[in-house]
Length: 241
Image (cartoon, rainbow, N blue to C red; front, side, top):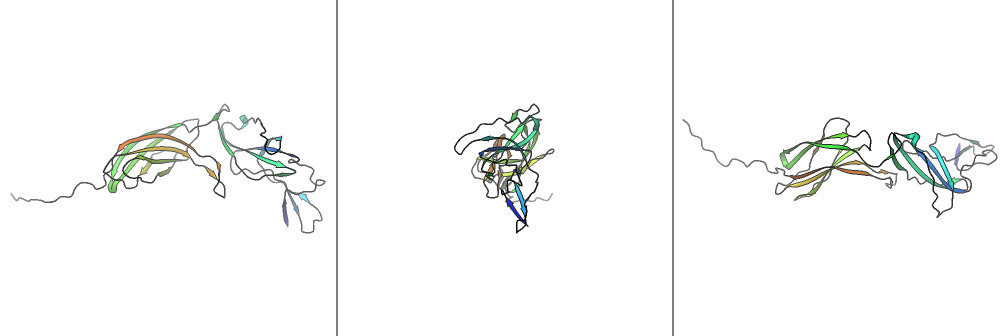
């Protein structure tokens, strides 16, 4: 069997959603979006062609236009509130739609308004000096009822005598979030920040299709590690009484 995309005989498949030229708007609640490509099945001798139905993401609107123009469309997303949706726009012409995806994430509050930021509160629980110049930093994350929810937290050095790598921890619904720094020097103090992050979404070619969301939620200043530990004993006198 052969699968021929974007090719059907009009007499057998009269629905042509991409006739002429313009843009389509798609809205879905998860990725990847399944776009409204049309398919036909045929055997190798083409005695007949029959459409094949596939599950697709909702195509909520379209507008006529040519390349170089900037069409404007108004889309009501209130039916998706509260929650996260992905919106994409694709160019079509003469029955074919451009397949390059670039969905945009939209987070909606209860009333349908758009939420643009990660909301919540980070609280510092403790900072411990550990062997080998490691600092163990423990925090708690108190999520807001509304707002974007981070997927991970990053501990980032902002000042200090060396440049340790960023430490990443996955977000947890409950319980502490614990960072162990790489080995630090004890010749001076360090400053760190903790960022709440929703990572970017990449396609198979490592191109960004949904941008990263980031917010600094905690600043830590003047932290000093103990790279060497207490000095060794250099001598001892034993007196027997």
